[in-house]
Image (tube, rainbow, N blue to C red; front, side, top):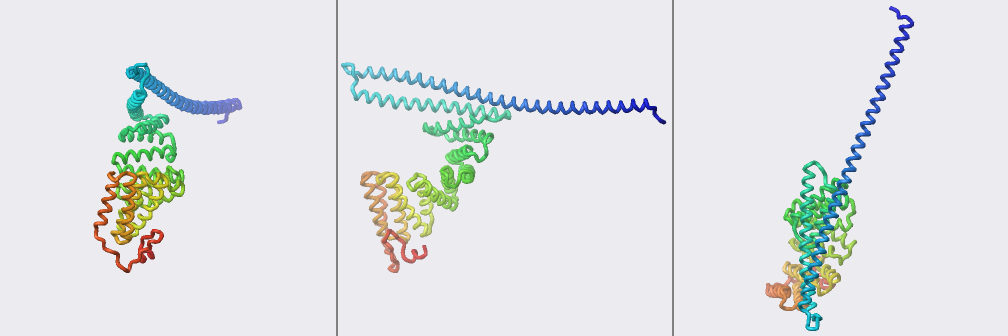
Length: 411
């Protein structure tokens, strides 16, 4: 069957209209998709703006709270000044002028009471804010939200302020530091120095609470990440290395502790110098580890390290400082052990013990517990068996070398 020319034209027009409608529908769908995408972007932008507004509101609340606390402190100080003035009026002399002794006594008592009262009050305010942070954070996390960065940082600041005020509450510190770490990890990179500082602090808090195994994990993370991010000789890395080595020792991993102490000591001495407290403390811990071992080479290494420690302590703190006196006593002690083991001269050990007694008596007095202890160790050593070393051993006294000839050849 054939269509007329009119029918063909009508069919062609219908097909064309259908194509145009399809194009129109396609454009509408594309516009709809663009509208949906734009709506999604607007919702995302609105959510971010709401979060920013919420954080600003929280900061404003904190400023208001701090302002209120400051007003309370000022009011209390003004009241205490009035009380002090009243006391001053009571102790005035007949001519209306307070005596110097009364003025000094009053000043000391007021200063002590003011400082103590303000410290207690400040601790209370900080603890209240800490509980509010933890409570609010728990509610927010239960609702599926996240704490803001400012609150995470504020939690860590509260810990630092409480520590500065002498308030020791490691359970509270742990809760605050855990809250702070969770918040920081949501906003910063895992190896960000601020995140790693919180990891290190949390390790300290856990170790103080006796959770040494868990503390070890945090110390390891802090040390390894700081080594990669900051370098092996950065001060923060060395601090984490020292704490990690100490924790290794406390959990019985003595070999790991010794290796790490040696590494920290080498870096600290090179970067910070031998008079730095970190260098001295690390050397002390390493010497203590070496003395625990049974080998004569370990005793000799401990003696050499103790000799350096005495020099460093005197340079850093002075010859009469308790740290220098303790270093002297421990050097004499390791010489005594070495002499008992047959790897050091008993005469040299006796002289070191006598020098320690004399120094302690001169600086602290003969009746001081330290001087009495030093004298007791000397008496015990002198009363012990005085068996002489075999004639075949030749002792090298020159330069302070206490190894005998055979041992020196193989040291």
